[in-house]
Length: 320
Image 1 (tube, helix red, strand yellow):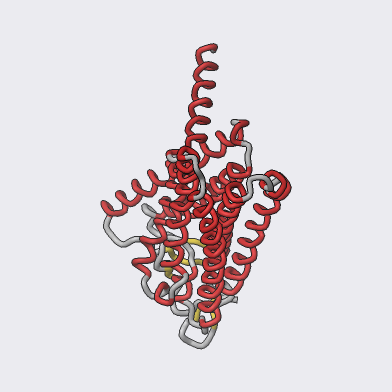
Image 2: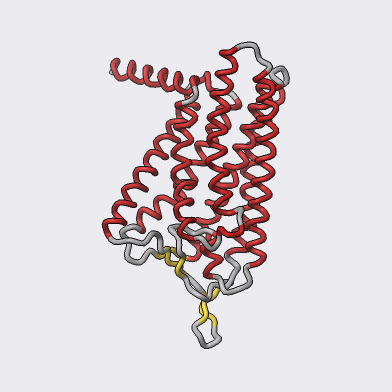
């Protein structure tokens, strides 16, 4: 069980951590608060809108949009694990988080991050089946198959989260209880641990690196076949529609996996905490905010669904 040494060889169990967050005076904290609040509000509104539109519009009841709705749900939960506590701490004098609260926050952060990675891989496979095997697509990507794929993504995320959380929070924390970050994450926690963290670092780089490589291989192979199939198409309109849909997904994949690689899958990640804070803002708040914008602005079906939903609510408002 984690403990803190008092200098006399006795062990005092750690009950609380302090999230140091970002350095700076009151003006800097106020500016950061405004930025975080704006990012979080746009994230919540954008992802809720995507979930509502896909649920209400019958024309979007297809495997691709089923996965997109789950991605929006994960992004919504993902940012909600971090943002509310970070916003409260900007003007808090103590910035304390309990040991259990820190472990819980990290568990759900790891769960949602890993699940999102798997979902992006599943979405690439879905596009591969739809474009390269259109005749087999309805039977292969039936409702039960899509549900299983989403459940598998959550199970994979849960496995990684249980492993990372268990190994991280069984470390002894005796050098300090001050976390040089704005949320509980593995790299800053390993910095304040006084035990041997070699296994934890191996798990962090090994599992995260393996997941990144595995999902990336699925995506690269899927889009390799998709590219060949598109180039063989004779219809220019069909090519443009497919490039628009696949381009949105590739943009989301590049942003998400690029930031995760910088943060977790390279050996120097643990030492560079200041860089890590900036990168963390990007993948915990900016990317969940951008995903609904990427998929709605570049997707004709979603834009038409938004228009239909707006017209329907306008007609109901006029009737009232």
